[in-house]
Length: 324
Image (cartoon, rainbow, N blue to C red; front, side):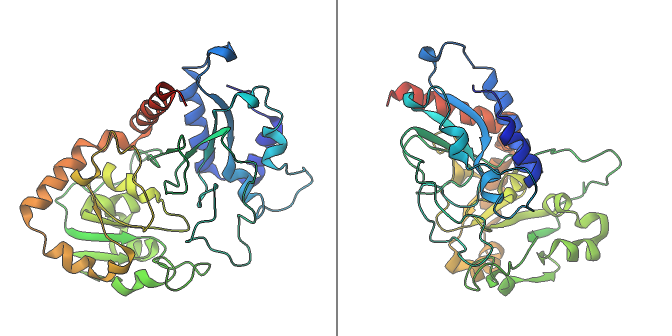
């Protein structure tokens, strides 16, 4: 493991992506348990930085501190010629090539691809798509701080919503044909068995029972659409709080497929079939729903830090054993 570069620390402070910084801290702490001092004995070399900090520096307020290009930091790593350098990439689009889903308008946080990102590097990426190369690892966006503060009311009654979504319905930066550019509004509404609307609307309607976590605790199914990228925090959150995720994200490749049987506890619906979700869920046999709920319960602990990082370590071990 390389030491933290002070330029990167300052950049992270400026950009202020608190959740993404926390992922880097957890990953660094986890990998440190396997660190060795002899570079000739290392399977991988880990540089403790997150590419998303450099990407979002394009939008961060300009300050006196110079914002380095990531390769200004990476090019100086002592063992770069050996390859197998692990880089965390929690960015919203694949860094190997342009994503067909990428927003390309003014204010884009990703103005250029990193042309230096070659076979020397293995990405650890939440953006799990076909754009990842062999040796890259798709990560689960594990649930951070899964337990609420003491005193927060938690929904403990039976699940009274068949399906739900509580979040941003449409981003103005995304085209209207995108699932989060406006199409999600086609199934928006509130009924006796569903809620699809903004997080603010959920709180106004339900009060404490409308928090993001309580909405998931109340739901049999949680709709998990793509946002700016193909991945979503909501996927792991849904499973952890007991809801069956309905993944609506064309191009998303579910990570850790050697270890996780995703069909046991999730549904995948193409973006073109978004409008069919309510009818499809209402028509699902109770026995099939019960099987999926059992699968959700079985995979709950993989959705928090210790479980998700155990999956990562197993994938890295497989790559190391493969030898190339």
